[in-house]
Image (cartoon, rainbow, N blue to C red; front, side, top):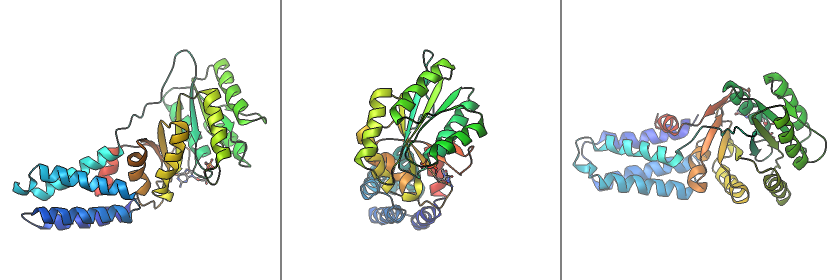
Length: 293
Ligand code: GDP
């Protein structure tokens, strides 16, 4: 994961480290290379530019040039700003004593929503909670069946009915209450591209079912486009978090590094494989460490 940016960032920082004393010009040059590494990894232009400006201001403001190890301080600043760029993240999933909590998953088709719904249910089960899955993707052929199969595999009930997405979600919540499930995960429909019909359907569910939290499931392989997708969904639905999938592939880092900067919405979990147990907490410190190699 992120091999390209780790290598080019490593090269940029090695050059800085290779010098004994640094001048302000050296710092600027070094950070320009860091910025190039970001852009090559498909990080959003404004996010990359602002990031470098912050590291530069911090580094020069600390008077790093007078230190014995100026480059180490700059690397530390890059690390700290990377952490700030991606965090903070609260990994808790809300819980209520009086009724099931409703989590709505949304996203483009193929992003990994259905798989992630099951992964999330398994995670909740592991926390001694009692989740239910709601098959509200009535668009993609096979989505309901796919969720049913996944539900069986992980031992989580799946609510479905061949009506319409709003009724599926509403009745799933009622069923969850009746069967004492404490959390309902709504697997909503996606489209290949964002369109008004998709957004209208999601807004209708949002308005009528009032989910406690809404998570965007987004594919890391689409790079910084993930941040644009997140912005559009956030404008329509007020996202609580993103779940970044397919981070086990050869994604370059553009999605992970751009989403929070562009939208203010943090990444909460990451998908690290196709299997149902491949959902992990997104930990900015760990990610920053990995990026810095
Ligand atoms: P949906 O259309 O958004 O519901 O997408 P699906 O859940 O059907 O996922 C689309 C494809 O992506 C499937 O082949 C999944 O197995 C795969 N997928 C989902 N999450 C991940 C992940 O984290 N890593 C990998 N490698 N594949 C994933």
